[in-house]
Length: 173
Image (cartoon, rainbow, N blue to C red; front, side, top):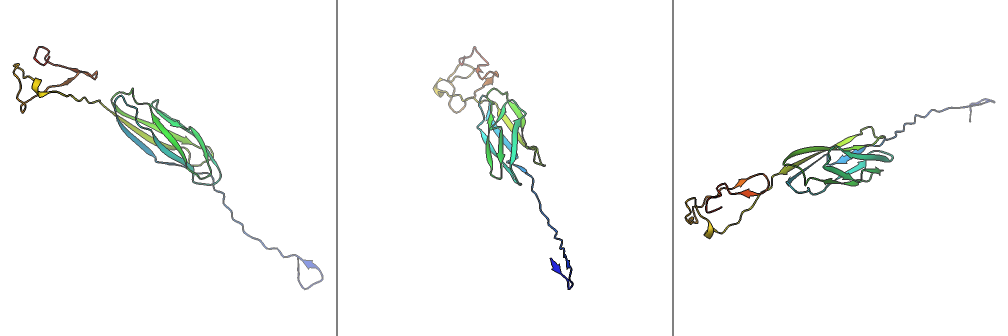
């Protein structure tokens, strides 16, 4: 109440500008790409990535993958700012030699920057074979004992991870 020199009370109003902001959840993931190189027949070692809320409130999210050889655990989570770790597993032992790509998608319905993706690349290399031999028992094409500093060895991979002698009638066969 404000009395302004008269007998009637008058009212004095002040207006205040109040500004407030609400921060919506912001989905964050790191790293944004993963890469592995393995030898055929192996499962790649697991890797991990982090997911967290870089905004306000609580962020609930789910995780999915688009490749049958790629999986993530756990497949959901919640964050109010702390980073949650997720394990990426590769079921790659039965994959053929070649390059593979997949995507991990993290979705949060309340985040305005959802979804976030992590690109995954996997390279499967052919198996290699190691051949051990005793030079005392190597023969050249004529059947003569080969000299130890002039040995030529021909190896043919038949694609079944086995080796075959290309000249079965030679002393090597």
